[in-house]
Image (cartoon, rainbow, N blue to C red):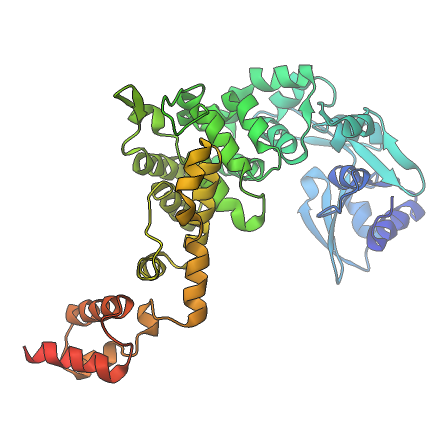
Amino acid sequence: MQFPENVNQIITTLETAGFEAYAVGGCVRDMLAGAEPPDYDIATSAVPDEIKQVFSDCKTIDIGAKHGTIALITDTSKIEITTFRTDGDYSDSRRPDSVTFTRDLKSDLARRDFTVNAMAYSDKTGLIDLFGGESDLGRGILRCVGEPEKRFTEDALRIMRGLRFMAERGFSCEPKTGTALLKLKDRLNLIAPERIRAEFDRMLMGRYTESIILQYYDVLGVFVPEILACVNFNQRNNYHIYDVLTHTAKTIAAIPPLPENRLPRIAMFFHDIAKPECYRLVNNSGSFKGHAERSAEIARRVMRRLRYDNAAIDRVKLLVKHHDEEFSSDDVSVKKLLCKFGLETIEQLCTVKKADDSAKADFVKTQRQSQYILADKARAIIARGDCYSLAQLAINGADLLEAGYKGAQIGEKLRELLLLVIEGKLENDKTVLMQNAECRMQK
């Protein structure tokens, strides 16, 4: 494996000083899988004071010296170096109460969560794989190191990390690991909401999220109990070919897992979550009147529980609220949408609408083509330079103030003029607009 030169140099420097040192964990896993690791971690037999002494001519930061971690800062990178250790009890089900430094690599690897994360490498020794991680990686299996119940009891967040790994990489869960994961799922209640949110976010962005939601909804239900009512909920109308949870999972999968699609994917998780409580049978057909607005409120409530930031909550709530609303696609209507929402939100609404319809009966997609081109039309309007916002209007508040308008009258008049311009009833010209404004003042 070809690790970056700075990583190899750190390992070599520690070895030259008489210590063992290896690249460990996720970076080894990623390299074996042919992926570029986002970061690199090094484990060593040197204790923190010895690490700082070896690198006394470099900048180091004690980011976790109590737990054996020192950050080595160079001009181009920050590499974490951690002493081999064994962990004490986990009284908070998240972090060990104490750690004991050791000179034994095996003891250090044995405390890790999954076999694919419990491998070490150096050019001197090659790959060190004591728990079958390379084989599990090749076969796409997620397996705990040692006894699964012990691993999940130590750190309950590993339950969500397991779901996230499976969603990102398409792993299947080894039976004993899967059994323990489900058995101990309620221990997630011991974990800080923001920790769960971080793993939940990454799980929703996985390429294999659909299957994880359908297999492990019981786990998600620990912190989003509202999702459990969606399981096997028959929608009983000709628009839908799946139960609510299956539809939800498929709509998430229909959106490419790109960074710009994070909020639309979150929105799809929530977009129909209120359907079971809004369900009514009308003429032998399922009706869900008001479900979008109710689902938006549930999304707000859950995201607040999970400590999402306000901007994310507001955007997801908006996307959920409007996901099934029919917008007119003529130029005037799209300009009004641009004024109300902006281009980015319209693009996300198109993404959400198309994903929603992708998991319905085929005829729905034919009926809804006009909804998928809203963003294209919005971009064309912007490219033409058409006026759709107050910032583009040829007059501003100062002009109206000079014409005699006061206080709230100014904003009201500007909005009125903008609407007339958008509807093509007035030209966006300062003279024309001021004539209209002055005429109204005289009346």
